[in-house]
Length: 358
Image 1 (cartoon, rainbow, N blue to C red):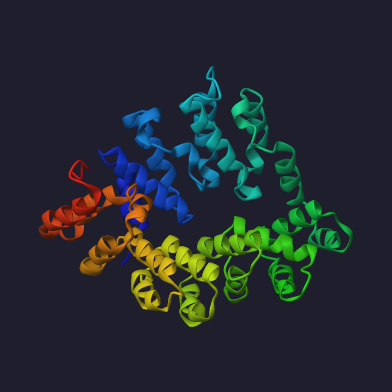
Image 2 (tube, helix red, strand yellow; image 1 turned 90 degrees about the horizontal axis):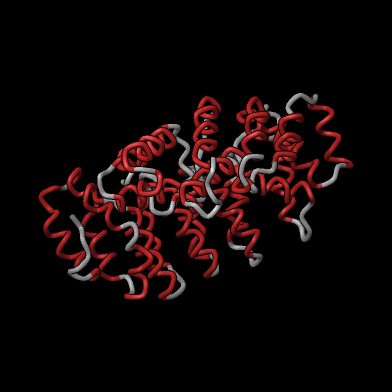
């Protein structure tokens, strides 16, 4: 199967900074939410230094923070930003922590809003922390469901978004999310439809895979991208079955996004599915993207196929995977140590002899 969250989390503490950074990148792209990710990041900062532990930490797209981790993360954000310019690397990492808190469930950050507001006032790096919006989201948690539902009738788009999220936190939003997602089947989706699509793109919400996969093949890039993110976040194996059934009938953008979904979910059958879909690609660009996806899945159970995919990707595509390739070393030592010398030899044929693979 594809390289797992468990393996990648372990390698967040690896001695090679390239392995640490590539592991964090893959976890982030998959919207992994294991609480130990944050713990491992902080442990790496303590061991290797905040500036050196991860090459691109401030640029990662996702960092899940559980409610019980909030005090620790808030404390780190304050400590790492004090007395530093916003261009300072350590300060930028602090800003990412604040931003990550702001996009968690409202119930998770609500008890800590006073502390977060105080921290926001200490440094401009927390400019992405929308305190007022967060306060409104937290306040909605105390409203009655019947009151929140009234916003669907006459509320502004922002009110509808807060009401829908608050109902979802209580497990009472299924009807409204489905109604919103299904409105995309009409020529003009409702405000609730746009709000529901935004919600499922910000949280791991399952049950709407069939409708979302239809949106993945839409011409409107912003809509298709939100649907893609939603399916990746859900990491539902059913999504892969749907893609297998619909892939051949999709347009080129839909096929490319579907390959991106499979790659980023990193599920048990992902690499098998990629190989099944490759010959169905509408052109060479799609087929090359399928090979890139297989490389980035790092499924060493099918080592020969993985190596073939790496050797066959276009020269211009090697740079798309080179950032993650150092993962091959600890993975090979763990799963197929006897093959490492051959793997290394074949990798260096494309990467060049000057590339350090351990």
